Structure formats: structure tokens, C-alpha cells
Image (cartoon, rainbow, N blue to C red; front, side, top):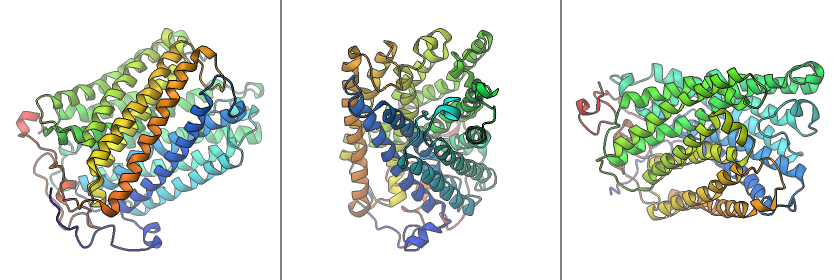
Length: 538
């Protein structure tokens, strides 16, 4: 491994003091601001999860009262979904890498990029204030009319936090789309773009088109609570099912905001650690767009038991099956890329393997829930909890951690201890499956979600689940420790410690402030591990 010294001037040491960070317009520094922020929210959401699992260790409600339990799972959902899972990869790795991957010096709108971080923090402060001043008990779905009429908790404050944070998401998506359209290096055609960029492009489309809907929906909840207008409350002439349509029109595509960037990360990892260009580049690229588009057409499968017509349910069921096709295309192409590849078992690749396994389980169980009869049996049980944690949490977090390990040397200029990284990955994988695997069983057997108490026959599964959560929590803490250690004591990283392809590996680690001293000219696919005619890149 090359242990040459780091460049004397880079984005980390080009400016000192808190002011230089809080007023920076450098996409790389803003990415780190996001990284620290989402990490803080992740551990806050994790604390709520820990309390939930401790309460469910016994069938009785003996740790917290049911009202407090309602607030714990609500705050866990709000913090994890809106303040970690959605921004985790786009706002951190996307912000850091997209300009570099396309040969640009920054994003198209650097000031708006910084503004989006401040908006995110402002929304987070409102949400934390809601938690500290009594919390909110509606569930992260804010179902009406409970949220608009019956709940006495901080619905408006928490909703305002989500409303504000939505603008951060919209601005980030807008910035990415304009940057990819307008700032690609000469020769970097659409079909030479890294798949990480393709996945973020598709994600940005969802951010721009879907986020305003959830923002307006939450605003309408606040309006109904404050002015008692009949929007969702049937007692006032409103329609509660309308709320579900509006909420899930955004929130189902939001699943793909969380998972598409992780898929982009995995595409990069599979190529780098199999030493092969991706099999079926165009199929993988277009499958990202297909997932984004079809994702807008499947919200109705969340309403199978809401009273919508059988015919509507049938249509949504069929369309929901279709979204499995582009998802399966990605998994098949990753697998085909690994076939006869020179696979190395470094920790980023272990996270990629973990992602593929967990996402496949989550995706296949999603087919159960897209089927009308099965969904009615398992609706609002722990089977749902297990399914969406396998997709949204297992997928997104394994993608996030895999990407963070892969690009950590580029971000910091330092290597981390590989042995500890593999140990942490193993811990997280075992802990995750022990936590959520039993929930498929207990959910299928009929244990409902959102209850602090449950029937005694479900306890053994809940004990296993809580034991798994403990292992998982320890697994999450280990990378925090060795990443922090590596910043001060880690081995100096070379420009390309993995021997990978891509423009980001052609500049020093950590990168200089302007990324490229001379604008690169791209003459072939940026991840060309094999001759183009063999991999279908034009």
C-alpha cells in the first residue's frame, strides 16, 4: 500500500475555524456537515429504538406507559425516516462525490447547497423540540383524523419540522439534476456516467416531484388542527382516506429515495471489488429510472384495508408486482458481474454482499404484501415491521456503511483498521437478522404492531429480537470508534488504495479544494475494467 504523504493543501486544511465550516460553499465540506448531522440523528433514533426493544422484552407494559411507548415509536420513525434514511447517502456521499465523479469543481449552486443543510438543521431543531416538550404519539404516518383531532401531543411542531426539512430535500435534488445536466466533463456522455450518479439522478427526480406532496399534506394536517377545517376529519365533512392517498403518494416513492442511492453504492462496490465492469450497464442505469417512475404508481397497496374498491386494489397489486422487475434486474446484474470476477473480501464488499442478501429478503417479502389476500392477513402486524426494516434499514444502512468504508480514504486521506471493519460488519449483519428475522414469524402469527403489551406466547421471539438489537447497537458503535481513531492515527491513504476506476480515484486523498487542477477529458467509461465491446458500453 502506498503510504505517501497527504497533499499539503486540501479541502480539509484550506481554512480553519468554525466559521470556515459554517460558511463554506465547498460541496465536500458540506457533505461532512451532513455526515456529522445525520450520524447524530441516527444515534438519537437508535436511542428511541433501544427503549422500544427494552419495553417489548416482556409482555407487560412495565418499563414505560402505553402513551410514552406511542411517543417512542413515533419519534423513532420520524427521526430515522426524515432525518437519517432519506438524507444519509444523497446528502453525504452524493454531495461529496457527484461533482468529482463527473469532473466538476462543485455543484451547480454551492450557496443553495449550504442553505439546504441549514434548512435540514432547522427542521431537525423543530423535531427535537417536539420530542423534548412532550413528543408526538401519532406514529410517523400521522394518520388522520387522530393526528388532526384526537391527539393532544406536539403534532404541529413535529409536522413543521418535517415540512421545513422537505425543502432541504427538494433543493438537494434540484442541485444534483442541474449539476449532472450542465457540468459533466468533456467526453463524459450519459452512458459513461458512473452508476452511482445514475442512481442519484433518479433519486433526485423523486425528491423534486414527491416531496412537495408530503409537505403540503403535513401542512393540511396543521391547518385542520388549527382552524378545524373539514379536510380529513369526517366529523367536519373531510375524508381520512384522502390523507392516506396523499401521504403514501410520497411515502412509497420515498422508500426508493432511501434505497436507490444505496443501489448506486453497491453497483460501484461490486465493480471495484470484482475487478469487472458491471454486467448490463444500460439495464442497471435504466432500472434506476424505472424504479423511480413505477414507484409513483404503487401507493394504493398501502390502502388495501382502507375501503378502496376491489378493482382499485387489484390494479395497485399488479403494478406493485411490476416494481420488482427493475429491482430484480439490478440484483441479477450484480450477481452476473461477480461471476468469474476476481472478488476480494474487503469490508466494503462485505457490506455489498450484506445489502444484496437483505434487500433480496426485503424485496421478496414485499411481494407477499403486494398480494391482496396476504396483505389483509398481515396488515399492521410485525411482518410489516420486518419487511420495511429489511428494505429501508438493512438496505440503506448497509449501502451507507459500505460506501462510507469505500470512500473513507478519499474523504479523510486515512485508512481504517480493516480487521475491526470486518468484525463490525459481521456484528451488524448478525444483529440485524436476529433483530428483524423473528419479527417475520411473530408478525405472521398475528402479533400487531404499535402495542406496548402483547400475548405471552410471543415473548420468546421478542427476547430474541431484543438480543439482536443489542448486538446491532454494539455493531453500529464500533465503526464510530475506529473511524474517529483513523482520523488521527490511521495509515496515510494513497490516491487509489483499492485500485479502483473512476475520476474520484485519479485525484489526491483527500481532494484539493477545486477537485481538479485541470478539467479532465473522458475518453471511455469511467469504470472501464474491461474492453468496452465486452461490456456493452458505447
